[in-house]
Image (cartoon, rainbow, N blue to C red; front, side, top):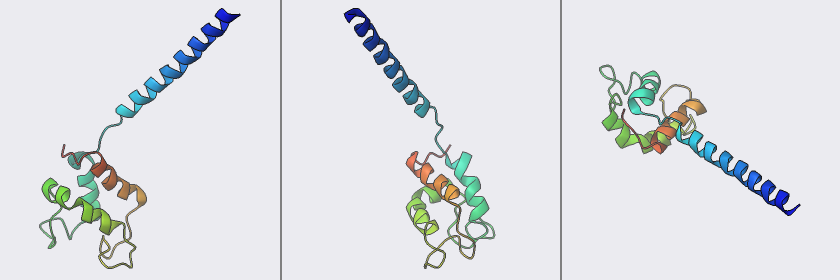
Length: 114
């Protein structure tokens, strides 16, 4: 009876540990967002024409350097209410939560360029 209890405890421990390992492995496999691969298209679709040359007359956000430098201010402004001063995108509807999440996740992932 004692041997059976020990074997059962080892089996349960092994099962629990194997599950912990696979969940860590699954988390590592999630690709990180990049400016070129993910954020650039979102900016082109939502910040144009104002921040996209040649038509734009505001600070250009068609390049990694400007976006990575201004990401905190961009996040602040796109999360404002449309009636708040400084709300972006100007004269457009508020960005969807999933679109705002792309900006947030890019920052959290380390603001990778490519």
